[in-house]
Length: 275
Length: 284
Image (tube, rainbow over all chains, first blue to last red; front, side, top):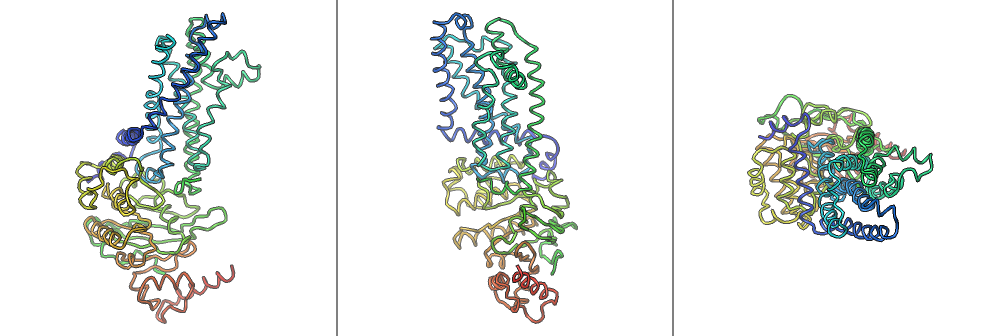
């Protein structure tokens, strides 16, 4: 009987449960071509639009001519941040839309396993969108994103950690407040966007706003990218600082998720999950 | 009122143990100022089938949700299979399962995919074999590879039941298990639940509005009204006490506060409880 296996799996994190959830989202992706298309569509539109803009600016401005690729690089890194969070949050929303959350919460699946599965799926969804995007950047604009080399790993990790922290927090908000809070999933990252200094250096901001900007890990990544592409310097210090802030953000977002889950149980919102 | 375990044929089945399957003590749930469940206590013996009856808003779903750990009680305790909930839910959730009209299976996934995922979540050994067994038992073969969202209400109920049975639960919580089913399918589902209970010595707690279903299936009935337990006994005893031949008539008596329907040999305390409830209704 399955009881033995179930009891054995009741302590710690069980990979089979994380795997089951990844399989669930994989089946969903394969069952729906619009979902797959959406993953590729927006990154493609982004890279074409901004790529041609960069070409135009490079022909007319000395700085951008020297700083070849900063705009396209920024577009791709921004998409890693934004799509990473969306990939996480949409997988979570799928459970709300399907009214499946009660089934999951009543199963042996633990919150941490659920979140780890969502993180894994955000990587899968991101890969489906970003890999063609970087291919287009290379073939249309001769920008080899992977030419950034090893620093790309540091950029990527920091951005994806931030996207997960935001994803965990907004998923907790939706869990607690129902689908009425769904719009936060789509908009919160845009509130971070101007402060993350994606397309311009931090020094452009007023001093007091710079202090705010430096509390956000993506700011360090985009500054690091510009240092690499413009000055050919890899700023490891920026990446370490970003990683430290990300560690704090991840812990805080997980604690917030657990608190919001508990509040949802107290409020009875896990039964409905509607508006 | 009888708030003991009650006699049940299942209590002598293999798997029956000394601790009750469910123990609820002074359970209360407040939503702001609404008292959804009000100081409810009962114990459910292992291997029994218990029906939770009551009109809309009686507190059945909230009670079941608190037993499952989906809703936190305002006060009171719940123990499931000997473990306090929700504190020890990790030790219990793999041994129980549920079906509810408040949740669905992912609609775009096929029945087989859904059962595979839930089987993995519950760490079911020999999962393919288990799915094959459920397919045969619940007659799922014709739509096993069809998207769950494209099934009829009856087919969806059978799939939900297959999900609820995937881990061979010791405790099964069912909220309206035959709602929206035609009489033939509903009868078939009831037969299957009874057979499962007998075969596995499982405990079943079901909330239902179908009095015939409760009469046929349940060893014991707990009637709730406005968050409180109104009566608690075997169906035969309850019908005798209310001097009625069907639970539906008892239900109507309770819902409409017709305490004079109680037979003269009813426990004095019970009649007083009902009378005071009626006075309470007038006062409120």
